[in-house]
Amino acid sequence: MTKLTVALLLSAAAFAAQAGGNVDAGKALTEKYACATCHGKDYNSPIDPSYPKLAGQHRDYLEHALVAYKRADGANGRNNAIMTGQVKPLSNQDIRDIAAYLHSLPGTLTTRR
Image (spheres, rainbow, N blue to C red):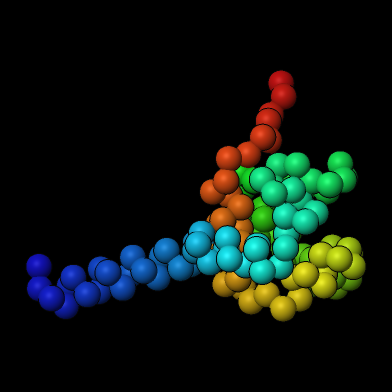
């Protein structure tokens, strides 16, 4: 392989990893915004049973939910004053990073048959 081919492959891999979210950056963001305060330090034990468990949740679902809170009362939005305030400053990459981190955690979500 030529140096150019190797450089292109490495660039593509880095872009793909960034597009899917960065787990370490997501962890830093959840700490910065104190997400564990409501959702539990393990993200499996929220302080209120009506708050969702986030650990192990599907990444695309988490991204969708955070974007919906960011939209607030707009089209396809979710209305919750606390969450809307929390996600308002987040960029799209921040949302992907948080979703990647929460998805990477061991969860207690189960499917019943």
